[in-house]
Length: 569
Image (cartoon, rainbow, N blue to C red):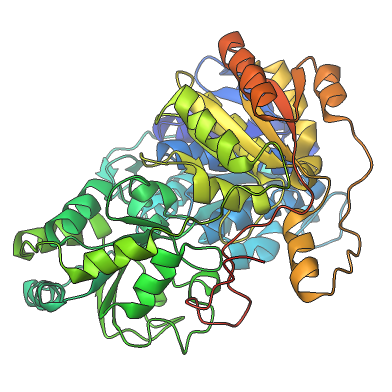
């Protein structure tokens, strides 16, 4: 049967199990949107207020489900507006397919109206990207894009399609050979040309690593987002409990291990706990799993775990020895490698090492201050108490993000969605929309700072139109809090352009979009407002007034070893 390129796009999305896409139409992509209109019973389209919001929504959809998120945009500024969202997904290894449409093939490279070389622009922030120059290649290119996005270390892939390719027709053949990706979720044609090969160490290599773990007297687990991505949280739990190994998580690994588990030391790094940072530097073996030794974790690389051996387990060989020299490594699927290791791991009773860790754990990440009658620790713990462990938390970037990581007791994977690697202010509102639409029977609470929320608050229009029941808890301290904290500590309190003592009134803004808005200045007001938001089952914004001088502590000053923490100021 002969189909247009636009129809082939729809058929290929359906092949891949896509049930929802996010995007914004324009002239170059009109043919695809016309087919979406005709096939709205097969794929639901969510129209966001801005292409960046659509990209973040596709990201949130993916992080909360493990599926590939899909975003659509037109040429020129439509495509460039996706770049921040694509880069955000790239830095955090999120599988996403972005489909853009460009000017017609004869107009490419001629500075045509709304033409942009989006493949050139996104080359550094995509796992791979394509420009389709023949309708005969379109189906296989889209299938390959989904395969590449999911296979091995996940990441975003972009497919750019000139408008005349979406109008051209060709013979369309459904997949004749059903090849499955490594995670068994995505169909692909036998003709696919490039497949990321996942390495698999030999039995001897696995046995040698098991011996290293068994011989360690002061082992320490440093866990990253790769454990969540590879659905290896149960295997991680078994390893930790069998050897009684203390566990610290990166920001991206927060939901990989239950926060209230006796072996959990909390977050490691610049705003990590004393137990996590001291534990890493006092151990004899740091076992890093699905983590990339970010500068926000290791700080001074010459003094990180300086008395320890480093064992690195990761799916991406490029991460081994990239940021820190390792003594041992295993490259491959984390879930598979842990399942091969576990039968070789010997049980280990609690020891003096666990008692030493327990002493460090007595120091809380930060105490209630006397500066504010509503502290983030209280608010975040109440959210968990009210809604339970299945709640999905999204954040923006800044102090509120760190407080959420420190204080919210995450216990299940894929319940904490945040921009870790890129640190994208404006990420969370779109991500909350994607996560809530992907999980209609769960509650999504978006924790935002007033600075970040300004950047994409236009997505309140999307929340209102689609009646997305996201509860937005706005940590409103009237400042770009994390930047002010640095100005306070290291720039002699010169608060250059960080004070936000001007609009909008977020309660009135919510009401303008037909969303309930309330203010909370103390604990009782917050509890009452949050209870009402939960009981309504609808979207709501709670504007929480918090002190401008509240800080995120502990803190490791830039360039210092992670065991030299500022515990108080």
